[in-house]
Length: 367
Image (cartoon, rainbow, N blue to C red; front, side, top):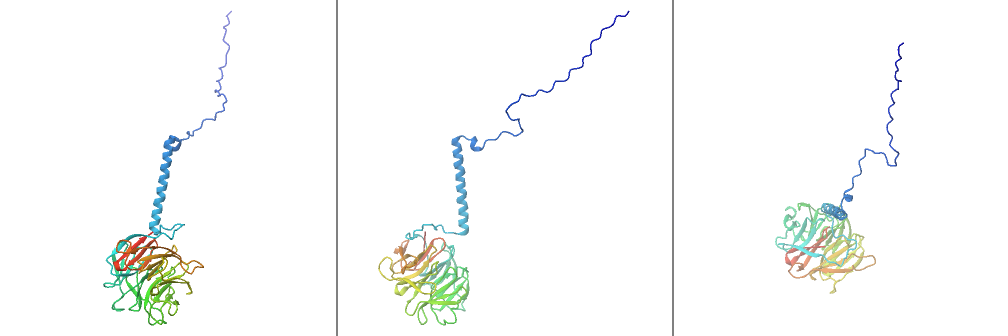
């Protein structure tokens, strides 16, 4: 009998253990987003952070200054425009252009780059000079128009840039281009056959004003921008050689009645509004010549025998006399002094130009 062989029990292989499950936690599951990077301000210590912010502020202010400078030089705007402008503050003397011969009238482009000056002495040429006083051109009519021109006062048309110059002896107003080239002779209209044009001015719309020392009586002619005669200012016996005209924003017209020693103000229809009389007080006049009105409401009147420029406020509603503000200049030959000043003009940048007749120079003042 064969002994039975014992065999081991067949035991199936154990199943693989399930993966371990982490214990639950309140922490969020990790992601691929990197941790936030601190800003420059957060990374810097507090004292360096303050310096950094201050530096940024300074760069911002510098950028504003540069931007304003670019705007200013492109558009040539006056820096003097302030909400609370003090009319009692006179301009300050800046410079003079010498070598002129008894300068009489002056006109200037709004940017101050072109200055036109008439002369009563020497060859009596009318000059175009630049801001530095350099001679650019001579304004003279064509030889077949008049053999010799003695031009007294000039004005710049704000709409075209053309320059108008009066010649009393020739009985003409000559018109020039911006560069001084002769263009034409202005026609006073069919109703005016003989005239002696003296003072001349334009308003902002291009309306032309010309004083006439001839005819049946002295008056100021008013012409539309197209040259059409509109009306006359003044009446018989009112004027005795009007040497200056200025127009304010309201259209009021300021005329220096020179030989009567007064300034007369008219409205745009020709009605008289007020006067400044001859006298010895600060606000009175002696021998008024050139007149100019700026965009800030200041009326400048050259008092030739007073050796100064007197500054008034534009006439206000209900007033009969423009309010006197201040005067500038004195008699003498030093800078800022006058010897019989005559003509005056203002540009759009706060500069005032005065012909200093007996000192043979053009003075520039500025705010």
